[in-house]
Image (cartoon, rainbow, N blue to C red; front, side, top):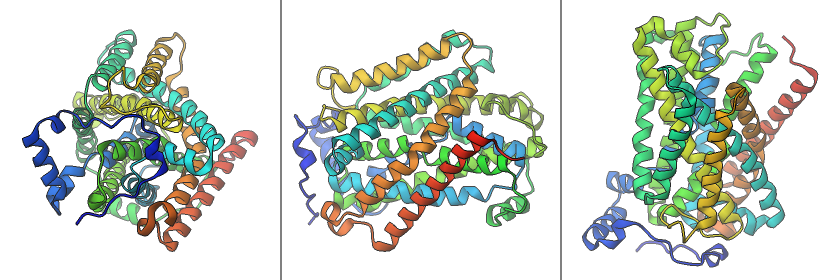
Length: 447
């Protein structure tokens, strides 16, 4: 018999039952879906897969690809070992968030408001709004930068991309939107192809992955490593993941599959990041060549495979930016609506959740308008968004560690003591790294 989900106070906030899309209105398909959910093993996983994978790869947006390309172009393979560590950190965070979403059926901002109060929720939401607005601008700029490789002007790309994303979310159901998001993750195969075309020394790659090298590390290199951590484990991914798990109504009997989905997304994300680093490291040889954007990385890779490299990186950048353009405004809309008790959900119509869709629309519109403004420095927008996300991460992680370790909230599914200790250790470490970034920007970075 399946374990019943405990009733939480947050469930009283919802004003109307959640719609489950077209599948729930067709008896035969509904029974098939329910049968898949009751099964164990591969079938159960296929019924659940989606939120963790989407949340993970959404972190490989324009800012992420730019950061990884910079790491490879300026330091070659020397710091490739940082990616297995960020994979472990991301898996830890996403597993905890998925567990919270499955057991409570609530979003992260909803739980923050209930457990820590309205003031903390308001504080978290203001920072998330600012960071995600900057990131939305950065990814609209990333989409425009990708198509600029093929001579498409920004005045066409920015509004067209924003409109496509808006129509997809507003007029789709959760399941249709999730399928399209999953399909978009296929664009990251372009980076795998780029790494293979680079024909690296795979023995050197293996050694770099497993052997940390901190000897003689410079100030800029240390800050670059901090940026890699910040762009890999971003707060908006966690808000999206928990809201998506709750929206999908994944039951406790499917908890194992949901956790596996979250961990798989973490591993896949960092594998793609490694491919970007490898491709740019081989192409530019680690001679300190500055990469100003992911589009510049595409041009830099041209010696590897001619114009085909431009197509690979251009397509990958456009698809990654489009995915993040949808995820970031959605995350913000979910978080703000949940935090203050408004209706939310992709399966709801415009009339049912006007605040939710209003926030989503506003962020997309601002992102497109800002990018079309003359004189915008898209790289500046990307860098600013990464700093904001990085500064926000320890705060969000502290909420996640505290919530996921609460036996009163999760019962037997709460994090064990050793996992809580690991989590608080990560909070302290990331807080110290952020302090390092602030001090470096105040006093200057030693060469």
